[in-house]
Image (cartoon, rainbow, N blue to C red):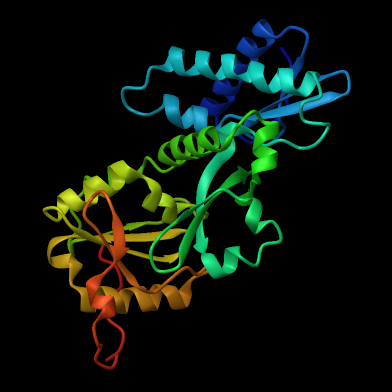
Length: 291
């Protein structure tokens, strides 16, 4: 079997080969090959072509307790819908997103509203002027917003589009469990593993419940940058300290969101009450985030 040269680590190379074998066995009319220097598989037949990202699937099967054969079988079976849509011309020969690359991305509403296709995006409102929209995660730490029309070409109506984004966001950011399991010295946890989507933890219900539990039913959150989220509980949730931290991180942000402090009870997110109270003049920098 020919596999393209790749910079993937050996474990991912073997996983890529495993999926190639299954796709080739299930859909012999298509020609599948590994994407060179990418964790994906491309398929072609006559004038049709398509690609399948393996990132979400790999993260799913490497989670503790994952049902690996079932997850892979689902992935291979689900490929039929996209292959059929390509063959019968349902995509109109136009680009259609890979459902396994769809995640929620968080930006400010005023930034989103400047996008040419803003009205075509599927969005969820968040506090303090934040807005989440469905995006496709592309190779090289790049993402693009996905319109409803583009999603329909991939066989996804609004409900299924949101469900895929929910699933992929949860899987992509699942490493929060490891970090939250380690008690930090200052009662604050810093999540920066994903440069594009760490702030999208705001859209993961299990995460919100877990951080709220750490604070006895309430916790504080900061999202100064798209790739940064700070969670604080107990003594670490002092609003005055967190506001200083939020401002400092916001000033350093590559993709700035908000400096304000948020609060969660595990099921909802709101602007922290202290953000609506009169403030004393800022007295200077304090220690940022305790690890």
